[in-house]
Length: 154
Image (cartoon, rainbow, N blue to C red; front, side):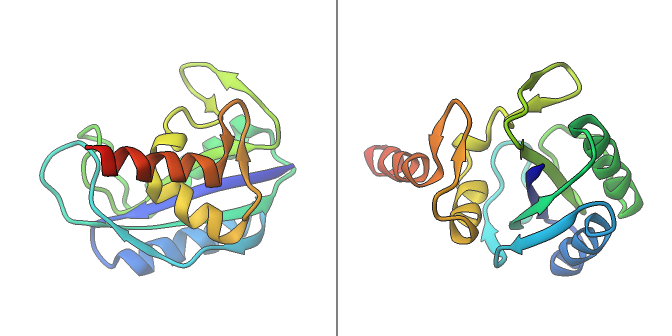
């Protein structure tokens, strides 16, 4: 099954944190594409450093719930502490889509419920998959254009 995963870091050596996460993820999925890294301002939460973000596409034989569990273990292994919602982090690994799998449980929501609102997910994803789409939301290109339009209108 095709999976799209977003990565972000704003503590420590951000590039090394993302690269380490990619190495660990590559042990459990087959990574086929990795975007360049994008520097972005934090969205919400307390005052904190800017993020480095990337998106990868891969193939996985794991069920989405298992993949989420593995991603959370990788985060923990790389020093992620979950103490402040939307707070700074060494690494953030978000499962954005997993094939056409849909889930709306407290543990797993797919597609990711806020991915369509996040340019720091859409822009790197579009870079590596120009015809990408989010099930039930539309094409990544049109969603990114809508965000840009909304930013201009504000």
